[in-house]
Image (cartoon, rainbow, N blue to C red):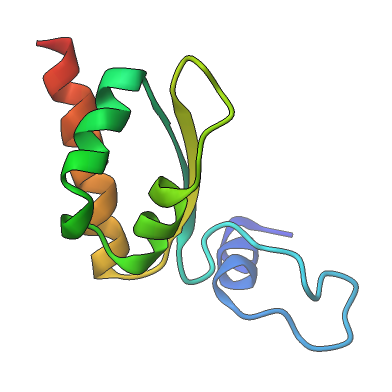
Length: 97
């Protein structure tokens, strides 16, 4: 499979009945992002929870079982998801200053 065929395959939806049906394909209508928050960053995110869309709010409202912070694994599919991701990354950037 050459590079153009591979790019076309990644961008196209999976045909029903194929072996890959039901599996997420990176690059098809979005991407996944793993954001690891320290306890301080988690508190900052919870203080600004009204700025996030419902997808991020649901994940932030669940209680984290990790004592050292929280891991958020979110699928970025539209502009509101991207805005939430940017806000979380800003919290991480501010903690480094």
